Every structure is written in C-alpha cells, then in structure tokens.
Length: 530
Ligand code: G4P
Image (tube, rainbow, N blue to C red; front, side, top):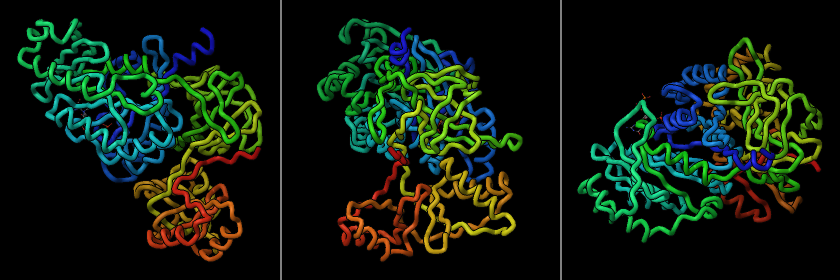
C-alpha cells in the first residue's frame, strides 16, 4: 500500500460525553468489535467517583502504568483506527480539549434519558471552534428515554449544529425492538445481550413491504410514519456537510447491549475523515507531505514512584516518523532522537519502528517537552490550535517548606508543563498563581508535589474572576493599561501578558475603556520564531 493509501485508511478520533452517558462502555465495545480485546470489562473506567485526590491518583497510577489506555489502536475492516481517550472528570476538561486538537473527528455519546447535558455542550463548543466533524450516538435505548424527535430538536438547539438521523429507533425502554437503518435501509432487531457481538440484521426492500408488519407487528405503521417525517424534515445526508462539520449524523443504540455498535462503526469508518491538513503559524501542512512533522498534545507522568519518567504523546501530522532518527524540537531549537517510541494496539503498547499521519507515538520524556511542542525534520514551524482556556479558579502558591524551594519550583514548572494547571507569575513580588478549571486539580497538585518532589505548599484562594491574554497593535495603549493595572498583570509560562481581572464589572469596563486592546479568553500555545 502506498503511503497515501495508508493515510486514507486511518481514522483518528475521540469519544466524548457527559460523565455516565456511556463513553467507557462504547469504547470497550469498539475494541471488542475491532478484535483488540476479547472480553467486556477489559477497559478500565477513568471515572473519579469520589471527589477525592487519592481516588483520582489511584486511578491515574494504575492507568499510568498501562499508559496504553491513552490511545487505543485497532484494525477494523482494513482501517487503522486510533481512538484517543479523554478524561472522565469535568475538572480535567482541559485535557479533553487538548486531546481534541489531535483527532480528525469525534463521536459524541448522549444518554437518551438525560439528553444534552452541560459537559456535552462545552465539548461541542470546542469541536465547533475547530470545525471537527461530529457523529452522535444516542445511547441507552433499552431505557425509556425522551421522544426521538424531541431529542433531535434538543441536540440542534443546545449543541448549535444541524443533525441528520441515519437510524431510527423502534420504541424505547422495555418495548425497544431495534432500529431501522436509514443509511443502508435494513432493520436491526434488538435482543438484550451484553456478551455476544452478533447482530440480527434483516434486509428489507422497502418500508412498505408486508414483511415489516410480520416482523415488528403494530409498530410497523409508526415506523413508516416517523421515517416519512424524518425524510421530510431533514435534508438528505451529504458526506461533505458532515466532513465540513455542518451536519452531525445521529445513530441510536445501546452500548451496554452491544446494540447499534456495528452499524455505528461501519458507517464511521466509511464516512469519517482521514488525517487532514494541519495549520502551523507559517503554513498549512498536508498529511501526505514527505517530511515528518507532529506535535505533543498530552504528557502523562509515570506515577509509579520507581519510574519517574514521563511519556509525551505526539500526533504525527505529516511524513513518516522513524525510530532512532534525529528530529528537530522547534521550541528548544535542538535535535532529539527516540530509541524507544511506543505505538498502541488494543490496550497494549509496544516499541514501534515508524508511524504515519494520524498515528500517535508515545515518547519517553526527560522534561524536554511541554504541551504544544512541535517536532519536524528541521523546518521552523509550530502547529496551531492547542488552546489554553481561561481558568476558573485561582490560588496563590506559597512555599510551606523553605528547605525545599527548588523542589517546589521544579514541581510547579513540570506539572504545569504537563498541563495539569496553568501558571501565572504576578509582578511585583514574583508571586506564583495557579489557575485551574476544577478544585480537584489543586488536590492533585498538592498530592503530587509532596509525593514526587518532596515539596509542600499552601494554596491561598484569590478573588480573580478571569485570566485574559492581552494583545494590541497599539503598544502605547497596551503599556498604559498594563501600568494602570500593574497589580493585576501577570505573565504566563510563555511570557505573554495576562490580565487577572478582579470581577466581571472590572473586566467589561476595562474592555470598554481600551477598545484598542484585545482581551482573549483562549490562548494558543504557539511560539513560532521564524
Ligand atoms: P462514561 O464513561 O460516559 O462515564 O459512562 P460508562 O460507560 O461508564 O457508563 C455509565 C453507566 O451507564 C454504567 O453503569 C454503564 O453500565 C451504563 N450504560 C452504558 N451503556 C448503557 C446502555 O446502553 N444501557 C443501559 N441501561 N446502561 C448503560 P454503572 O452502573 O454506572 O456502572 P457499572 O457498574 O455498570 O460499570
């Protein structure tokens, strides 16, 4: 197979959902259908049930030892699928946002009983920002859920995207009989089944065949009516609209019962986009270019105390990544060679000789990497679009053990490189402020600082409303604003100025008074120097 054909056969994606909608179950079923695992129960949930750092750390420790859970590769019908894992806890949403920069499409799981939940909406905003194609799987049809038409309306209004059902459920809950596949025009009949991946598919020539009445009885007329309505209300499915992220195809099923998974997966491999072009500060890089390039979207610390190394996850964007070849680390302007890069198959990892666009390689890291770093064959470029969102909770770090100042600094610096939280340095006084999206991250930071660096600190809450990155073409105005607000101006890790707004009111009045200044709520880690 030529490289171009190999790239065409790759599907790199993530499954996202509000906690409990069924992401872990669906992930596991995909691996089961892909033959990468043999039994259900093999994929560990990454859900933190108790709001406790120790619970989170234990899960991370176990998962850290088998980091392969971060990327699950498998083959299906000749396609090479890379499924990227995303955290199950909302406090780690930022990690999910970053993972979304490394995928070419996503499958969004929605619980048919609960409909669109808060986390689903936020995740979808990130997909829309990046124009990521989305397929929606409405799960738990074995439970009495919302009316499918109401659900579709809710998806459209709350997720702000057009939807197009490609399957249609025949009842729900205890009356659930199966789905009619509008894309392939066949019936998939349901029987509760948690162990087998067999499906009971019946091909029918038309919805108006009497055979339909024989199979599903009195529900046949309802199905005909609903399908007529669907065809009347929703525009015909067009591949381009999906790939351009304008329409999200919708499937119905029950992950727990292995139902609707095969048709989801079959359609997914057929229509989901292969690795596409990626934008850098200077140009767009095509996947089929000869020269290798890639970027780090995730860093996983090995929490096993005996191995203090980290693994940086690099998404290959173009060319062929090869073991033992020298690559250019753009930010550090130095060349690095990787003796033991990992690839991921099922939930196993193994040393790989090479990797192609769409693939993810795990690189042993001794503090060379931070999130957003680019590797190339020498070209000075930085991939764009690795966002930092304005944190929601801010704490000042105050050293609690003067004997361990160096360890504390090192720990804070490394943990923030990993993306656990964001670090801002407030002048004057060189005060260190940590910003996160959730409380749990502070517990994790304290826990890891003590466990891994022997450092301890106190974290004092600060009344900061938001962090906004500042840019302006008018340097004089920018300087004036920064002087006026000097007690609230900090610098992020890349030395970019940030306004730590005291309140919503102060922020809006600053924005009104200084129209020449742009206040950004999202920053991109991009330090291209060329
Ligand atoms: P998440 O990763 O999105 O957080 O969800 P997860 O797959 O862990 O699923 C959340 C709960 O929903 C689990 O039950 C799971 O068994 C259940 N579930 C998933 N798919 C279906 C489905 O199609 N139908 C029904 N009825 N339930 C489904 P749990 O009791 O929280 O966990 P467990 O003890 O079963 O693991």
